[in-house]
Length: 214
Image 1 (cartoon, rainbow, N blue to C red):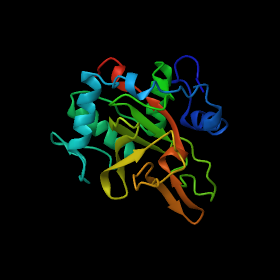
Image 2 (tube, rainbow, N blue to C red):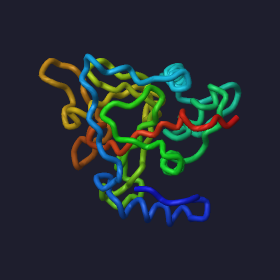
Image 3 (cartoon, one colour):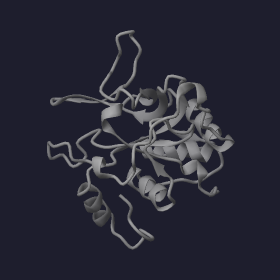
Image 4 (tube, rainbow, N blue to C red):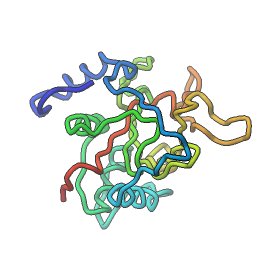
């Protein structure tokens, strides 16, 4: 989905209504096939790598205090803390970050992201408390690395603070494969069962490409 033009004139309620009306499977973002493993260059940049390194430094942290500044202890607050650690400002909710990436043409759905990309997810918890899985853009994480096999390692702020989780969009419904390799972390577990990162994934956002804001 793309909301044309600036989004500042829209209320948060209007944005949420628009997002809720369009399930992630209807995004105008084609899932692009990855190149063969032997020919695939690792997608990274100095900016993206700096963001990934800063995210990794915060693993195990619960307080989200960077350079004396405290940040909101949730997933989007974590992203703000990461960007602050590299001298940039990137505040806002998961929805705000998604809309910013969309407005700048920085969303994509390749099976492999670039290091430093943001990963957006739907339905990771019952945000509106209606007992249904109808909560778009409920979580965000930072891509730390991508293995030669295409397994993406991300850093996020979860129930236990800053931690790592993995995702493999080639096998989105596989938690651990026959060889015992973790392919997709459990991102939601409730009375309706477990859902994996690959099942709840919505899009990548390459906001590290955006002009730096100090």
